[in-house]
Length: 336
Ligand code: KG4
Ligand code: ZN
Image (cartoon, rainbow, N blue to C red):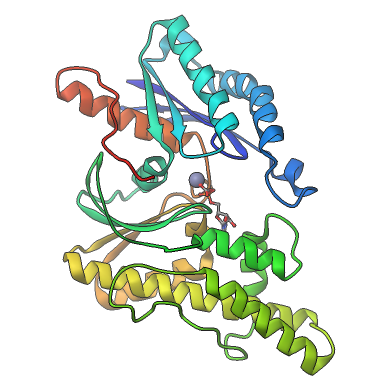
């Protein structure tokens, strides 16, 4: 079964081919990051237009990469949501038109399900059931994953997502867009002992989180440093970045640990853009070793948005529906 996956929910156009026998056979991506950088964030109208420009060439590149023709495709999966309306429409229209022309089924995929299942694209693969930490720019959730389509939210952020907190804090520190990865790079050279920021909701007793207060704490700390030293030099900025990252990482790791204890599960899957964060990975790996659980990550390039995770989630859905004796596309997962 060969599934074409199309992702266009935000500022990345991703097209990929997943073969249920051979695995990922093509994976093409175009990032609009540079285009949006001069505006300091994603401009939805520009995003939609660029998806239109890229989607066909990327599809052709996928076919060439896999050495197949359109007729070889068995189904077309696309990101149905959540995301930018106009951007989503580009992928949805393209996928539906292609499916109609080829007479093949179309599979709408929940973007977060794509992220959630993406660690299954790496080896070794976790087995169901597992706990998932989904940390992206729009979502931060801890979920019990019992099977494809069987997701239970155990805890989530009450305000900003972890990636959003990274991006907003980066902006506040004067870092260029996209700030999150850059902030984390600077943090690597920062001194963890120089400043300490609060750990929001660390002891709330539940699995919910809150990150919006952290950026205010960073702002207050920056002003303090500025007043004391007459400005913020490079090292001070790195130290502030480190303090911020230390706080987020400690909260995420602690909540995951609590969730594992609560559910009795011993496998943790990390997905979403913030899952690329090196300090988060190192802290989770160290805790996993101590507490005897296993952590799984998607391959680094599949942490952020891509077509591969959509093709894969589509293939999983398709296989399930076939096993049930018919093709249905009715995701049971409502995360909004
Ligand atoms: O999953 P994703 O590509 O898009 C959403 O669906 O939101 O995640 C993007 C988010 C951004 O907020 C970005 O700043 C963050 O992931 N991110 C990082 C790192 N790489 C990406 N945050 C912290 N450290 C990183 N290395
Ligand atoms: Zn995403």
